Image (tube, helix red, strand yellow):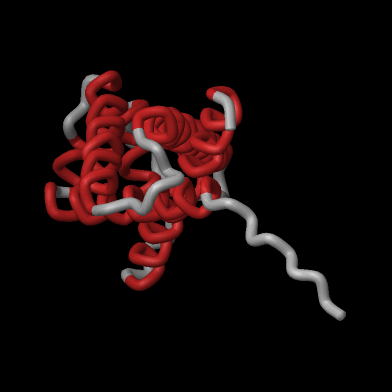
Length: 167
């Protein structure tokens, strides 16, 4: 597989890891009966608060606040997937995934995921997101992303099994 093919595979692996992280936070928020609470908090930390406008769908300002929140969450989701795709591309080019993968690549990829998250939040100039998640959640989610990303890259690099003719 050439460099371009490896990069495409890495971007796909990053998308899988991003979806896994987003789904894990969504499930945790559902358990707390606050769907999209993490996404809302992170997008608010990255793009600024909604200036104190309450979400009230019976008024025009409430509808506008709801649309602004939905736009921020959608934008943060796009940035989330792009950052994980960049991590996946980097990981696909750094390691040879045709060989069995140990713990070292998973830890390196987890560190890349944590650095990507921290970099995204640092670009926004806000540390609220780091305070909201806390270090233990950041480490756990980065490790989950590392396992998902490395697992996808390893499976994608495995050779296809040869078909045996059936008589």
